[in-house]
Length: 353
Ligand SMILES: Cc1ncc(C[n+]2csc(CCOP(=O)(O)OP(=O)(O)O)c2C)c(N)n1
Image 1 (cartoon, helix red, strand yellow):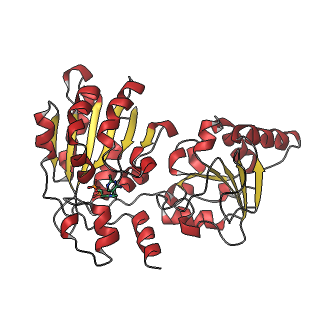
Image 2: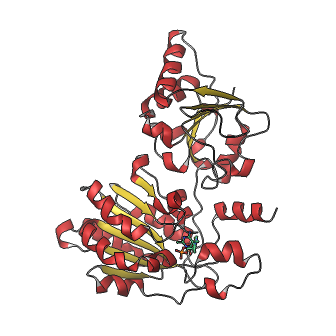
Image 3: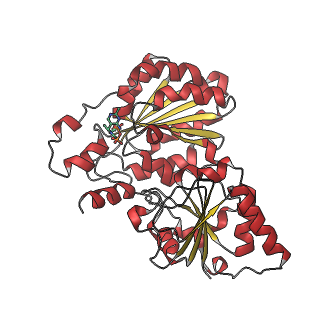
């Protein structure tokens, strides 16, 4: 057997993390999550990361190798399912959910139930019969499958490679963070490169509402909900400009425990990749490069223009300073628009069908 467990936000809401960890150990299953459940499995050693376009290609090949997949609290939307290509044709897909029935044609069996109760119930029964795990996951070196693209540092156009920025920030961002994400092409970088301590520490407001411009205004809410956490906003220049009035609110609310990462590609990048490629005029999709560092300084934050990777070292110094004496830190990352995230390539390919 090559068992796989997939958990989604429903599993997190039902408090299924520990039960799913027990079930994974009892069955010897490798694990994967949806974007909204990253960090739910207690044992990261056998976790492949996100199922779907935010997952690494090598990890997704292993998902495809699974002969049985049990899905807890995940709706299996088109992005999780890689537009139909996530599982092999003959994979047994069991969906456990409190919903009325299966939510994807790939589901071969539906079990109505709460994720936590179902997972712990199955784990209890396996323990009662002394079932031994098959050993599939121990035969695989999972960590290299999750390896993230490190990028080229500087892209051919002389601007930063966003993969390299994301990889370096993964090393620098405080671990007590809550990440707030606006919407746009850039959403891939946080999702592929920045680990999440628990699912409720990654808030994808832009994706939830399918609207850009909600990142900056969500910072005060995150700061109020998590008074001890570092609040890290990830936003594009398009969404950032749209919400500019809320820059001051964000800076004031999060103060010295706030960071904003602005993926400044001087464009509505998602539009360029999805529609520019189809031949539509790109000029309206371009944005004159805005000086976000300057805008931040105007409302009392510290703005840093990031043109080279060493410019990010300021984050390490900032993290060592007392919260009371430092200011909200905005990283105005001048990235190249030429690096297209793998998840966006998936969408481009579907649009071309
Ligand atoms: C209110 C609103 N307007 C337009 C869109 C369509 N839209 C989706 S992504 C995007 C581009 C966002 O640009 P930016 O914030 O710079 O991020 P990037 O795509 O460049 O990473 C647009 C315009 C939307 N989702 N919501």
